[in-house]
Image 1 (cartoon, one colour):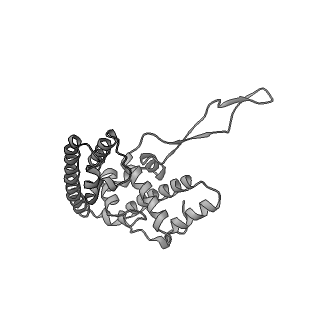
Image 2 (cartoon, rainbow, N blue to C red):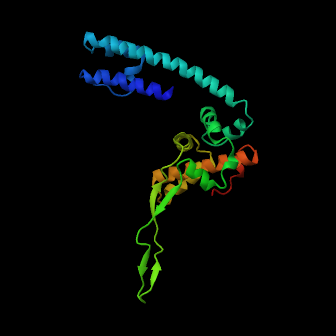
Image 3 (cartoon, rainbow, N blue to C red):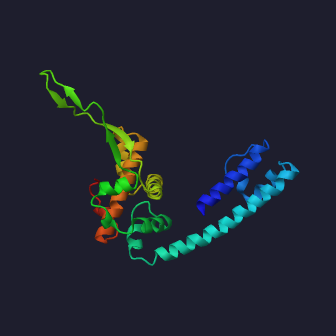
Length: 224
């Protein structure tokens, strides 16, 4: 539903832009402002925009129904309460996460879970062997980070990046947020610090789910 609604929004903007009408932001979708935008279009293009608006409204109603059904189903599972207690994870993110992961015991370690979520670092190198002064060939200790792994579940990555954004924006009493501040004070770039927070939230979810204990920030004395 969300993807379909995004496509319709893009089509609405394309109708205006193809007629030379400048549109930006979310105002063009607001019911209270649609008439003001429609009059800017040629008369023959207005019916198409009106149909797209009707499609957007219909998808909005369906999206609300789908959200209620998804949450109702997720709340039937005992893991819902556990996972929802983790920092940055609300009802929707928890409901999306549960059917994807299914069980935390699929992953032998947190690093395997990070890779599945698209949060695992990839290291590659070339010229692994160099000649020493003695003439012998030795393996070079240098390994270069090449970013995050490319084979991952996109929904899970969006969930944990969104959770990290929530913690950074709102969770000032959260131990993870204080760790984020220490990373910034230590010179870590904000985007890399945010990645660290996302990985820590993923680790917490895995631990809470395995131990079947609700997340308690007071027990988070050290952050791995």
